[in-house]
Length: 323
Length: 235
Image (cartoon, rainbow over all chains, first blue to last red; front, side):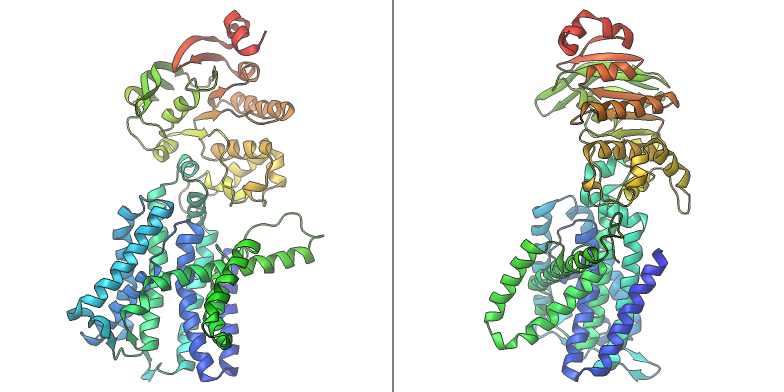
């Protein structure tokens, strides 16, 4: 069942993305790629926030960590992106483990503030460590991935790379959610004391959640760097962390599908509503309020509610968890 | 099996347990009774590692527990069913139970037999296995909390106010199950304000007042004791 759900999620993502790639113009493809990258990051964010209940507001720093690591290794040391990518993910994960032990002693809004501070520090460091990061000018000339001599340097080719990465991450996230480790994270989220009484090592579970969350973020960063081919501090400032949070809330906290829907919607919505101009922010704020008040489980909750109404007669109990 | 000696427990300046000693032999069911604030819950929390010992010692199977963490004590075989059940609201009944196997289960080991045993003890949980924790009634949550503790394959069960907030008939049902668990040979230490119920299943009892043991003895004797009858049985 675990395997089936994981495969289902992966296949659905590849099929939907593949279909879209046929019909879309180049600019829409670009947005689609950005939403795929965001979806990878938000699925990771969901592991920390949705599963383990860690209010982390520094997710963009992890994305930036992956992006900068790849950019520096490829441009300064001439590494192949294929070699730099796993190193980028590993560096990000290791970084999360290092800050995890001290940071995760904090709870609730203290953790939120500390991670927000981490994100701000990341921006300041990348803007000022000029020898390594080129400061606010950013690092340009990041090489694209290449497969058998074919550079993945246009939107349509990149989409396939992004979709494969997203499918793998989504499948892994669904599997995690259904595993004992995923359940342990949810137990820690629901009640730390009761989790300890059940024999769960709370600190280790939280650090593991943060590390997995950071690994996905690092991958998103690696994708971002090779897609835009340029990294700069403001691409990873704390506002992006808030956007990841908003994407997850809109889509549906605690679910992989919700993370994907939220990432896509909040990437395309500003374009669809370009006519609103600056009023978009007001619309966005209003939309968040409406969702928080009327749809606390996000859009995915709406889908489930509809499904439940249709199948009410047959349903004995509704087990949690579409993938 | 369990022995606490001269236990002093304090939260800051506030001393809750004043040098208290109790013991529970293997296979025994022991009740701790007393009014609100007597220190019953604190004693259980100290045994399971959730409250720090200021002085004195707790031994389990002759081995001092020292500063061992709560999650390590579960692995030794001490399972605590906390006051107010504290089931995981966002997890299903089955997931709550499976989490209980954390202390002993290694990769690939089966918990099916454990799950069946709990479902046989509490058939209601079997019916509701796919339902989320928060959606259960108080009685069902109590059964789930006890079931989750049993999934840990404990050698000793700590029960904190299992009848709290339950209708009398439900409370009796829960105690009927506790009696079955005890009859199967599990060692139980139960804290309870409902003195009648607790002394009906227990072999022995301690009466706690203001963090001190004021009375101890066989449950049958305590039921007849004038002081117990006046203070806790209202007769």
